[in-house]
Image (cartoon, rainbow, N blue to C red):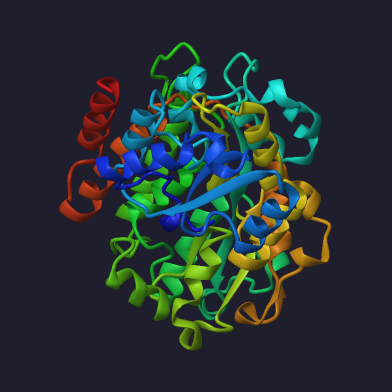
Length: 418
C-alpha cells in the first residue's frame, strides 16, 4: 500500500485510548454472548471494507472488532510498549519494518504452530521469509501486501535525449545502473534537464536494491560488504554531474517538479502510481512504466501478526490466514490498490491494468516481474536507521556542498554507534 499511509497501528494513542483497547480487545467472551472476541488494529488503507465484511461472514462465531487507527511517527514505540500488556489487540498490522519486531518474536504467536506453513507457497518467498526469525523456527507475521518497483520515465524528455521511448526498448537499453547513469548523462547534455529528483532519494533507491544488509547476522556493521559504498559513489557522481534536481521529496516543490517534468525518471513502488495521478490532467499520457534497471527491489508493504497476550491464539491465527489469503488480497487490490503479496492473485484478470494515465499501457506486468525476482535479504533491526545515516549526509552533500568523503566518514561513524 501507499507508503505515506503505512504506519502501523496504535499510532498516537493516548493512555486513555490504550485503556479503551484493553476493554475491547481483552474483554471476557461472555460480554459477547459467548462468542470469541478478537480486536484487530490496522492503519488507514491497510484492509479493505470488502475484506472486513467477508471475514465477519466467514467467522460468524467470532466477534471481530476492527479498529482503524491513524498514522503517527510514535507507532513503533506504542506497539512495542503494548506487547507485554493486556491492552494490546489480538491482531495487529506491522509495517515493512518487520525486522524491528523480530527481536521481540517471543511476544508474538508463532503462526507456524497454527498451520501457516501449509500456505507458504502462495506468497512471494522473500516476503514470507521476512516474517521468520533467523533460525526459521518462528513466523511472527503473515504478508498482507508489498511494494515492488518499476521505472517510471517521461516520454518526451527521453525522446529529446535520443533515448528509446517504447517500454520494452527502454528496458533493453537501460538494464544496469551504469546504463541508467549513461541515460542521465544523455538527458542532461541534450535537454538540460535533470534525470532524478534528489541525491538522498536516489541513494535510498539504490540502497533498496542491495543484496546484503548493513549488518551481518552476528550484528556486525558490514555496510553490505561494499554495496553501500558503491551506492554512495554512484549518487555522488550523479549529484556532482548535475543529474539531480535537488528538490526535497514530499514537498510542494517536488509535486510541481513532477507535474512540470523538471526531472525525468524515478524507480517507484506500485503504490507510487497513485501518487503520480495527483495532478492527473497535467500528467496524463506523459509517462510510461518499464522494468527498473539493476536489482529488483521493494518499497513498502505490510504484515498481520497475532500478539502473544491474546486469549485466543488459534482463532486469531485463523483470522490472520483468512485476511491474507488470495480472496482478501484481491479485495484489497480492487478497493485500495494494494499490491498482493499472495502470488496466486497474479494470474487473475484483476491484475490487468491497462492504465490510460500511462497511455493505455498494461503496467502491472512490470511490478509482478519485480515481485517474483526480488531476493530475500536478512536485515538487522538497525538497518533502516543505518540507511538514514547515509541519506541524511547525502542531503548535506547536495544542498550544503559538504565534502562527500567527510560526509561518508560521518555517516559511517554514526552507523557504528547505533
